[in-house]
Amino acid sequence: MDYFPVFHKIKGKQCLVVGGGSVGSRKAGVLLDAGAKVRVVAPEIDDELKAQPNVESVLTRFDAKYLDGVSLVIAATNDRAVNKQVSELAQARNIPVNVVDDPELCSFIMPAILDRSPLMVAFSSGGASPVLTRMMRGKMETIIPQNYSRLAAFAERFRELVKTKVTNPAKRRIFWENALDGVVAEKVLTGDESSAEAMLQQMLANEDNIVRGEVYLVGAGPGDPDLLTFRALRLMQKADVVVYDNLVSKPIVEMTRRDAERIFVGKKRNDHTLQQEEINQLLVRLAKEGKRVLRLKGGDPFIFGRGGEEIETLAAEGIPFQVVPGITAASGVASYAGIPLTHRDYAQSCVFVTGHLKDGTMNLDWEQLARPKQTVVVYMGLHGLDTLCSKLVEYGLPSTTPIAIVQQGTTQNQRVFTGTLATLPGIAEREKPQAPTLIIVGGVVSLREKLAWFHPQG
Ligand code: SAH
Image 1: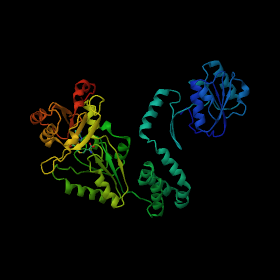
Image 2: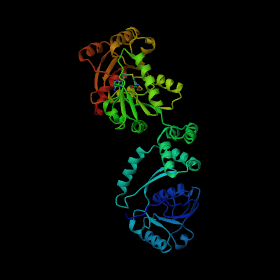
Image 3: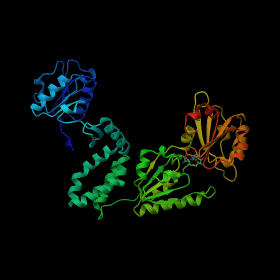
Image 4: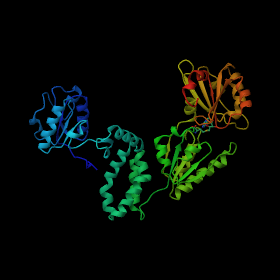
């Protein structure tokens, strides 16, 4: 270890930046963020920097006297001789000094930072490779959610209270581990601090200091794991039990925590009612056992996903839950198939409908669907394809209107079948697309030929 990592308290202290260009401005900005007063010395100083509060601009060349009363110095001029002079004079007075991009002249180096204040992560390669350091920071950016700031501030707020209530340090550590990894944290991260506080108090009142059971209703997107959200991934790796059905692709299920229990609740097409009720009850039972339950759903939970029904049961039972949106099949599949859902020349509106057959018929507002300049996306529509095409023609769409069926969109098995309202039923009959399939109707489908091959999966 060549450097000793510390976090330096400079709030309210006088710091000096020598150099007033873009680099100096950036460094001054970090100092200002940390609450310092910044003196900038340079013959020319960026206007924006000059205008900042807590900045004292001194429009002249550097002189030793500007080090008076200074706690920390950064030299950011493009003149090495000046930088060297700043470094030597500062070090002679034991003032910490950093010279940008010149480790030899530095008494301290500045890390790349990931700011989730009060949580702060600093990265350094000791000057070996700033690019590598920044890349590492980029990776961590994606792993540590933005709102960890909030979580850290929340923990800070209750630190003293917990200290007085849980006096044994080992127990206190476990208490915080449970709080910061469980329901309390989830509540803070979703912005519901009052529930989080109530739960924290409940934990403090409990003998075993634990409140755990909760349900995450997570949209897993249409299939490609790259389309998961950060939050989905985080919860997938946190859950004790995973409840999923056939719409969730295998690679996604495999990204859930390795030692989590996995329960398949695949639904058959004609057997919804009973099974849905059973799933609702299963979620309740698991959460009541104290587990962190991940209900993983294809696409978005609130778009033809019966997410509403599942959370109704949870809410009625008082079980904490959160809903994480996902990319719905319509948008994921359309973009991987090269079909823009709206386009100024072809479609000013886009409607999503379910083509699920009830008693063998499709109960849809055909008049509304058969409008010109509109894209219609049909979920669960393959079995009613004949009806769909003939009804749309009957209600006024030209039989030459383009239409596509996308099979297993966004996955390795994606296939796109295109035709017209007149021809597609025959094509489907021959080609037998494999579920899940999405149907897209409208002029936008004709753009596919121009656009599809820009996408690897097209
Ligand atoms: N909540 C889901 C939809 C559930 S309904 C969402 O937001 O996407 C199930 C229907 O979604 C399927 O019958 C099919 O029409 C469509 N679907 C889901 N994933 C799909 C995929 N990868 N490719 C094509 N269609 C898909």
